[in-house]
Length: 217
Image (cartoon, rainbow, N blue to C red; front, side, top):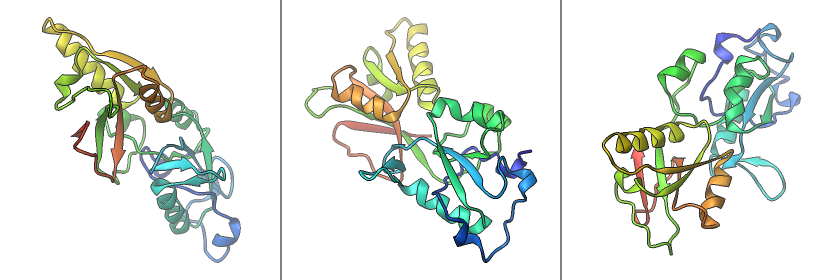
């Protein structure tokens, strides 16, 4: 049975921690509150550098990974990261396949009813254009009538859809929205010239004022 404590919607977490690291302490979460005895299993989508990514050696790296390591130390539990795409994470949590979610996730009222969410960072929706595209984005309204890539089932997708629907309701153009399973796919679509802009999120880092606009949420 998964405890309320472990239903972490936005906890930033975990590297693979060895049992030896925790041998000298007592776990703060008992086995009956874990999916698998003796370890904390969290999902991660390592496609969002610098928050979480896979390095050239195939190892998980990033800010969320480092924060997860600290969480494992404080809970006195080894952590196992389960790689999966973002859209599958909440269903996996609710199906008790994992103990928690290790990724940056925007807080919404709907999500807060599904799981316990821990605020730990200020994020921004970011709109980026290719430097040689000639596309200028100064405000969110500049996205109207353009094609934009976005990660599926994300806060950004819902935000972009609301922006598009509001424009259409006023007799204006829509945003041509194309969805992809990962943030890496979103950026790849931009570099391949498939879209005008990708709409993604960036936390803990500034966005260059040239060719980018961000909206804090």
